[in-house]
Image (tube, rainbow, N blue to C red; front, side, top):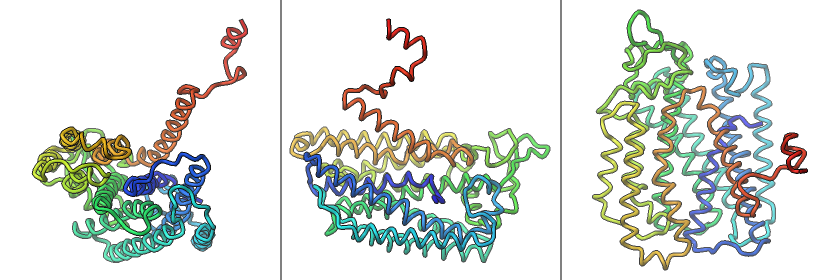
Length: 432
């Protein structure tokens, strides 16, 4: 029922759009419990419609079109794609239609207005149109590359740009659910930033997936050499990602000495090129030069120093380091950018007293500026380990929310356990 359960974590961008639009509109947090309940119900319905219905239907379409590729993938049994049984894709089309029907049902619900006055119906119409448009662009490019069985660097960047659109689309849906009639000055910077973050994340995951289509064999030399599997021909867009990182098939990999299955190799830790950054590092630097610098304005805080100060973090993000130093360089760049922003806000602290919810805005500033560093941490993973990362993030976030709720309600960090759930010695101690 969920072709891409890991992708449910991307719903955070939809929630980000709801929060950013609410801050931009100047709405105060709801104080009435009934209004709060209606707001949460509508946001939950919006998330279910977008992530569980619309986007999962889009992923089903992707699986139907690319089923022949998925069947021969090295990790086909663990990818959760369509089975090879006859008629599986026909059943999948029926499920797609059912998902779209349920979206129509949600659109037609007469929602009782809460404090946010959410326009769920309009937001979902935008979601269907935007998701279909980006899907058509991507599938058209992929069909062309399948026919050629080859992909240039330009084709790789075009595909990355198309796939990265899914992140700002989610943010835009959340924004227009709250602000259906317009945008603010910060909206464009946030959309551009989440698009670049999407490109960074997709490029990293493609690099890991490309390694899964290789075997790294010592072949009588001190350092392993990558050998491409036949399955890579069906996904030609993956190879340029490794080439851009200085890891083409047939070339020795310095610093890596353990041959094995590419799906178990953290290959992005061994990028070789120093002066030609791979696409994920270019996207991180572009993010800092644009959205990272304008993040205060994007969250409704005073503007900081002139644009010249943004050059330093961008240069740090592009330092000529190989794979092992990429996370450190990206993190240092983000911290430097955040330090400049905080210094500017300290100079403008008199204005902060007049800005509603300034503490929440500062917290969002931190989260936005540090996004590239958090995503860059994926280069430490193998392809197999990355497959369950989103599930662990979702479960960890849910656990944190429950613990925070327990703390705020006075029950402490951990949920109380009944006497029956304690071990016998503890129960005996309690009786005494």
